[in-house]
Structures are given as structure tokens and as C-alpha cells.
Amino acid sequence: MITADIIVLVGCILFVLIGAMVGFGKGLKFFTSGIFGIIISVFVCYLIFGFVLDWDAVRNLLDKFNDWLKDSGDVGTFFADIHTDRILLAIVLFIIVQILRIIIVKIIKGIVEIDNILFKIINKILGAAFFFAVALAILLIVFQIVAWIGGDTAANFASELKDSIFKLDDLFANNPLKAIFEK
Image (cartoon, rainbow, N blue to C red):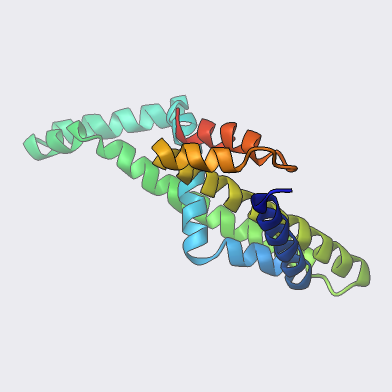
């Protein structure tokens, strides 16, 4: 067992214990409120923007908006040229995602925090699993940042992860976040 394995194991155990104490409802609310919620909404918008942009209804609406801008004169043509339609689509999409995120979190939090012994146990188990997933996400983000730094830092980091019981070297080399951020 290498030092990185011990750090990951201790970190995961701490996160699981905190998750079990806090519960899923409060943990989900914490990780989806404030700046975390905004980051999640921006990320979701990033993932679905192209999909929504390809819808015929949305495309037709944006084309009509661009035509209206171009008919408005030089200023309108300028705004059409800088794709104001896509900026407005991103803003509207962000607002919709924010509202849906808040509604979904309130519904889930309300369900898992029902004052019943069965739901309390489920809340604690889901809280532990959720916080374990958060610990794993933090690990993947750290690995991706080190990969972005690259050079000797990434090479030395990768060599320190060799012979990991948890196969951290394989996880570093095949980080799933790489597919999201490096298209």
C-alpha cells in the first residue's frame, strides 16, 4: 500500500462518515446550493446546449430572432453577427436548469428526510454513498488538474501512483473527466 492509497482511503472513510452523519437530504442541498449549484447548472448547460440548439423548434426560433435583428439596422446586424441568439439561448437554458435543479433537490430532500425510521436509515445510507461519490469526484478533479499541468509534474505524479492497491495509476491515466473536458 502506497502513501496515495492511504490518503485516498482515509479521505473516503472521512467523507463516508460525514455523509452518514449529515444524511443525503442535507448533503444534496449543500452540494447543490450557492456556488456549487451555479457550477452544476453551468456544467449541465454546457452538456445539453448543443443538443437543445439542434432542435428544429429552437433553431427556427433563433433564425427568426436573427432575421429580426438583421432587419433592425446596423446595430441589429452587429448583434446578429456576434450570435446574440445563442447567448440568449444559453441564458434561458441556464435559468430553466436552475429552476429545475431547485425543484428536484427540494422534492428529493423532502422525500428522504421523512420522519420515519426506514427513511432515516435510507437517508444515512444514501448520504454515505453520496459523500463517497463526492470524494471520488474530488479525486478525479485533482487528477485532471495534474494532467493539465502536465510535464514533469504529471510524470512524477504518475510514477508515485505506481503499484497502487486501488489502481490509482490506471485511474490517473484513464481519467473519465478527460473525455468531458478534452473533446
